[in-house]
Length: 394
Image (cartoon, rainbow, N blue to C red):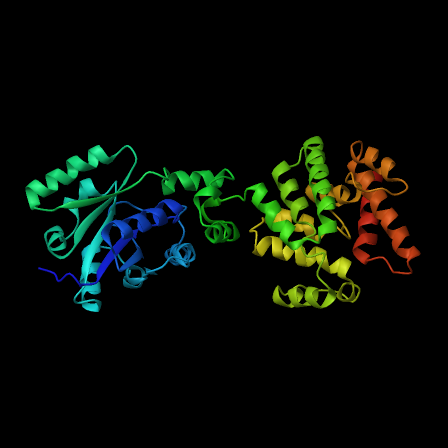
């Protein structure tokens, strides 16, 4: 019989694909219910009971998400023991290895509601029930079924199951993956885990726009926020009018000025970090650099696709052969509702009548303004003007 002062360790295995607050809340509940001294999350490398879906995160990414989700939890560890071991992740092999590491510990297996009824089929089942106790993590509505399974295990094998019921969260990882693809699911995830998923575009996830706005606002100066809001509104209207992807237009508009408040030194640091090539004019001009650094941040931190990053990259100077989205973001930045300068009403009307002519007008107005300040216009702007003139004439 184990001594009362023996260290009690809970083992919570699974794919955690991704880990969500249902997992962490269940872990806290089980730790309290059992009086655990330590709880170890153990992501499987290759689960024995079902194949990982094709869109799964890699083992290393699932491990990192677990570390992010549990970093503020007391007496919680995340182990890479099954990932390092590779192959099929059998719980018995893991318990055997951990018994060598903690020879006097009392182990508790935390088993999800979908695993208790198939527990008898686990590899080395007889050895497992002799060397670990069982805690079933049940969700609301399924306890009666689990109690039947637990009763059978006790009658047949003498296994006594302790239940830890979590009524707060009703979500599965498969449901969550689908929600992420539909710009949802953030409320079920730790904030840093959600940001990690978006940054790495795991599961085909798309960011929720409210979250994207919150993150962009953190990077903007206070006076810049109304402009970005107006640019988003204008970009979506233009996208709807011209048949462009509205979500891409919204994303590009929200993020187009995210590095605008950085000074020249900070801009150049980002250029070095992201290996951004700059010409002589750009290397001394914050206004020109912010488009390129903003595009880099949009891709790296927010996982934006290439077409959105390109729209951000070219929204200041334009370029020859601009895409539809690039034209929309360029002109939305120019004519958003907060803009007030001579000729803006004409430009607004043109934007919904002939987009190419509107962009050409905007570029030419930009050149006039720049030259009045004694600055040489960027070559990309001049080339864009010539390209549009040829295109319109043709």
